[in-house]
Image (cartoon, rainbow, N blue to C red; front, side, top):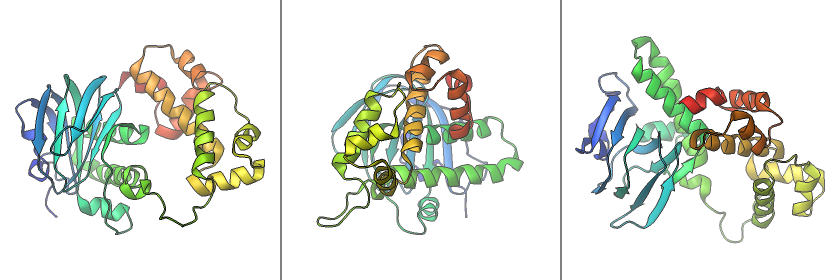
Length: 291
C-alpha cells in the first residue's frame, strides 16, 4: 500500500487558516494520516473524503457549528472534546475561535479490519468525550514529534487501537436502536436511564449496588446480570469509567487541585484517582493536566 497523505483528506488542512506544526507526511504511514496544527476562526464547506476523520481539541472551550449544506448543530467544545466525521460525506463547519487540534484521518480498510471486515460508518459527533481516543491521538502526536523509523510497529498498534475504539464507541452501528418488535437483552431504556441519572447525580458519593438495582426494580443479582447484558460491562466498571471521564474533564478544563477533583468524582483520595487513570489510560492526573 502507498502512504496515506493530505490528498486523502477532505481539504481542511489545505486551507490558509490552518498552520500545521507537524504531520505524518513522508513517514510511510499507510492507513493513517495525522496532523497537529493551530486553526483560526472560519466557516467553509468541504466535499466527502475517502478517509474517516477524528479531531481532538487540545485547548478551548470553543464554539463549533456543523452540518450538511447548512449549520444545523452547535456546541461549545471543551479541551479533550472530539469532532468525528465519516468518510464519503460532505461537511459544512464553522469554528468560532482560535484552536489547537490533532487531526487523524483513517483509511476505510483500517476501520473495516477493526469491524471484522464489515463496512463501518462513523457517527457524526461534535464535542463528545472519550479519554482513550484522546490519549491515543496525543500518543500519535508525540510519535511525530520524536519520530524514528523503529516506531513504525508502535504506530501500527496505535492506529489499530484507535480504529477499534472508534468502531466500538463512535460508529453508527454502535448507536442503532434494535428493530421494532425485537427484544433487546438486558435492561430496558427506562431502567438504563434511571441508572445513568443516579450515577450522574451522585458521582461523588459511595453508590452501593443495591441502590442502583433498586432504581431498576430488580434484585441485585438480576440487575448485575442484565446491566452487563445491555452495556457489556459490570455496574462497577461503568461507574469507574464515568468517574474517570468526569475527572479527565475537570483536570483539562479547570485548575481545581487534584485532590479536590478526586473527591468530586467519587475517588476516596488523590492516589485512588491516580491508580484509576493509570489503569484506564496509562497516565496520571498531573500528566493529563500538563498535556
